[in-house]
Structure formats: C-alpha cells, structure tokens
Length: 459
Ligand code: PMP
Image 1: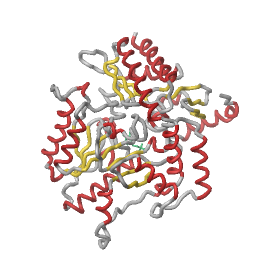
Image 2 (image 1 turned 135 degrees about the vertical axis):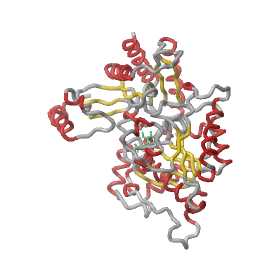
Image 3 (image 1 turned 90 degrees about the vertical axis):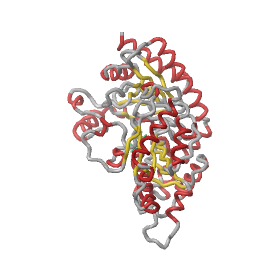
Image 4 (image 1 turned 30 degrees about the horizontal axis):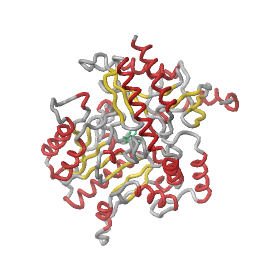
C-alpha cells in the first residue's frame, strides 16, 4: 500500500491522539513512551497502520465486527445513495431501508417478527430488558421482573447491561448496579463445576435451581449468549440448550438471546441460536449487522410480544414508551441490506463453516504440539484456544504471557485477540474471529503465526 498521502499528516494525527483521544478499553500510560496504533486503511482481510505495517486482521476490527471485510465499495455506495436521499428521520416514522432490511432480516429468522432499531449492542439489550420489565408490569403486577444472566456472558457497557454482566472483574468500581438481575452458572465444560456425564443438562439444571431459589413467579427472562464471546469463547455442551428451553417453557420465562457477536454469519448460520434449535422471544444483534460500515443494532422480537404492546390501545401507557434517536438513521439499514446481500451472493455462510473447520483443525494440530494449549473451542469463524500452565490442574498461564503471544503475532503481521485482560482465570484464551471471507491461506497464516508465537513465548 502506498501511504505517502498520509505521511505528512501522521505526526499531527498521533499528537492529536496523544493529547485528546481517550481510547476504549485500554490503559493509556504506555502511550507516554510508545505510539498509539492508528489504522488508516483496510482492504479485504487486511489493514494498514500509520507506520505502513500491513496486518492480517484475525479479529474483524478487533471486536468481531467487520464480517464482510474491509473496503466494500458497494456498501459505501449504498450508504451514500441513501444519505443524499434522506439521512434521518425519527423512527416513529418509517424509512425505505429500515422497512426493507426489517423484512429481509425476519426472512432469516423464522418465528420472529418485529425489528426495533438502535445504535449499539448494549442499547439493543437495554431495549429487551425494558420490554421484559414492562411485560412484568402489564401482566404480572410488576412481580415477574427478574432477569437472569450467566456467569462469563457480557451484554454491554451501560449500567443496566453491566448489571447483567457475568464478568465480575469488569464490573468492579462501577456499582451499585440495577436491582433485579440474577446470575446463573456458566456452562464451560472444560472448567467443570459438576462431575457428571450429561454436563449440558446439568449446567442447564443449575439455571432451574436459581429459578426455584428466586421463586419462578419473580423471574421474567433469561438472557444468554449462544456462544459466549469475551468470557472465553464458550461453546455450549451437548444437551444444554434443549434443557434451557424446557426450563424457560416450564416456568413461563422469556428467552433473550444476545447475538451481538454471533449474529449475521459469525458461526456459519445467520444466527448462533439457529445451531441449537432455540425459539427465542428476543434476539439482539449489532456488530455484524452492517459490518461496522454504519452504526446499527437491532432488537428483534416475536409477534406475540409485539401484540402485548399493541392490544388495549385505549390505555395510554400500553405501548413501548422508548426511543433511540439514531435508531432513525438510514445509513445503518442501507448498509445492512448490502451487507446481507454480500453474505448471500458470495456464499459466506458456507465459507464460514469450511474455514471454521480448518481453523479448528489447525488449532487441534497446535494443541498436539504445544502443551500450553489446554482446550480449543469454536463454532464457525469464532474460535478460541485456552492456554494453561499445566494440563492436569488447568491453571491458567500468566496473563502477561497471553499478551506476549498476541504481541508476537502482531510482530509477525497478524492481529489476534485474547479474552478480556482483566479476568483472572479467564484471560487466557486466544481469540480468532476473522472476516467471513477468509481463505485457507489466511487461516494458515493466522495459525502459523500462533504456532511461532507459542514456540517463542513458551520455550
Ligand atoms: N453483547 C455482546 C455479546 C458483546 O460482545 C457486546 C460488545 N462486545 C455487547 C453486547 C455490547 O455491544 P456494544 O459494544 O455495541 O454496546
């Protein structure tokens, strides 16, 4: 890439960054002595930084977002064409791309019916939480208001979504939180909490135990990630989801599936829940909806839930009294329509399954070679390798070593991720989530870099 057009300006950019930018999720002290990374261009699977480094991005923009890859002119054009027509009107009115994308999305989600637009995954989850609370008030005199969430799951960065946050260390120093959110145990079989044969069923039964402890008439909903993302790439054990669903039905508990990471192709189906035959009441999605070409998130629900807010229109309180200003931006759904077309026309779901299998096979081969890999997990192009100091005790490796592996891959020109750095015991999983366009060569380059990095860091 020729980055000469940037070179004169780049010191000004870095200076402005140091002086005025507050980056997300990182400590800034290191920037006193080193430069922040500035990404200036992207094409396909690759990005270029201000120093001219070409980097193969194995994490789709850092946080599982750029599902169709960088530099998609057709999405930029769709957004441009829409913006010059009309950029915005509050979503109490409709828009052409808003309606068309809603229709196309629902076609991919049998059983679902209504799309509510918002800006971010956190906000989409908040909308579902608010609906769940309102249903509790409308139907159960406010009693069935508790929302269960799972240890290790993440649902957002706002105070209410953090109240449903299963990564405790991430929440430290931000309380007090919102009442009425109750934690259930995680289902990671590698770190067993019960010594039983049917682990999936047992882990689901643990949810029932919490429901019985709290009182079923107080529990309104259960909110889960289909595959836990930042909490450690946790794929559900066999039998888990079937049992979860039975439990929800038994106690009349609404099921809210957070597809912010898994949604729109990441796991090789349109939505992660579709692997497990789940019938959700709410599905939230964000990152892959428009692959980061525009900010858009959706809260999707059923006609049954929708009707609860429509019936009895004589009651002035009987509607969802909520708005998201930028839920009326037309750029988001315009980008999302084109994003979806690309996934379909380029066969990216099929590619995701194929390349996901290749990634898992490569990781399994690395596990044979490197004793430090204790477990590999994944679904589609969403894979993790958990690093342990001892396979017997499963003691996690020192988090500095995990970061050294990530840095070493970076030095080889490959950006990989690791689960949240501040989580003792769970900060030890290398994370891969390349764009759904990844080729066999890309996958081999990614796992090849990990191979070398593990050799370097652990020998
Ligand atoms: N849910 C999950 C599973 C996520 O991973 C995230 C973001 N990492 C969110 C919700 C929150 O999304 P956002 O950052 O867009 O608010």
